[in-house]
Length: 318
Ligand SMILES: Nc1ncnc2c1ncn2[C@@H]1O[C@H](COP(=O)(O)OP(=O)(O)OP(=O)(O)O)[C@@H](O)[C@H]1O
Ligand SMILES: [Mg+2]
Image 1 (spheres, rainbow, N blue to C red):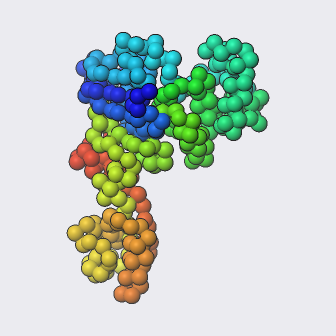
Image 2 (image 1 turned 90 degrees about the vertical axis):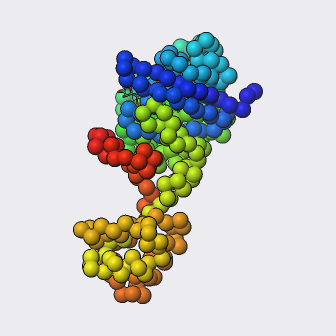
Image 3 (image 1 turned 60 degrees about the vertical axis):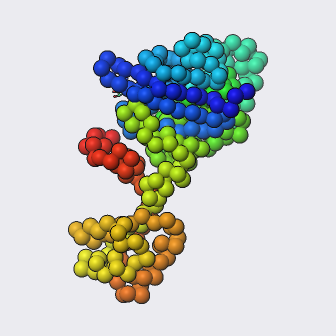
């Protein structure tokens, strides 16, 4: 079998005059998790719909699981699973009944459907709640059941379109661990997200998409390195000491941003702990009082500011 699960070369798709995909390229290796990271309207859902044969591209060469999405759409369909924004689950039925129904829908046969439903409930930690009506599930449980439903046919390639949008942190963590458990099974996963942290947690490689094309690609570490990695923020008690602090801190003064109104200085760091202990020690020795010191990762906004080199993102509502 080929090493590549998804190949996209020059994909284009327009809605009227609007270019949703504008020459998008993508290669996803088999058995990996690939993150598509992009803001609202970047073209993530359009890409997933094209890859899953729900939408016909205007141009480009696009192969999924070894088959062309236009000329061999049926072959593609039997090899993929899709978790869209809303799965068609019956709220009144229990999780087990829903999964069995999906199995029957995909012609598994009653016995096979029952076995598969049990396997999947077990795998996603839903075995105890299999009888509870889906309408009474928490957000995280609901999404795990969606995920189980998309795996009924044991797909080679699974598409997850914003799998954790709208979930609370706990539900998000539950879904993350469910997605991680897929990877061991050899499934290739393509997941879209607006959250840098989610791509960071789950994806082997990440394509950053903006305006229908890939503007950066790499591992989470590679992308972060391109962004200058983590940052340290230091808030002083006395704004008058900002200049002195910049001079004596173990940070490159050329990289330090100073915001006098907020008594804040902020700088990229290469090693988090070395930077933190160095800053604490230097301030202490100089007798400069800090009100707050924090290490933080770049925000998604900063990623896009850095990558696109303009500030139009900041003006768009999230
Ligand atoms: N059916 C449609 N008709 C017209 N324009 C559309 C249609 N679907 C999407 N678009 C436009 O195409 C662009 C890409 O949309 P798409 O839904 O693929 O983005 P997305 O990255 O999934 O966004 P989100 O994060 O909001 O889900 C957007 O500008 C969107 O407004
Ligand atoms: Mg979308």
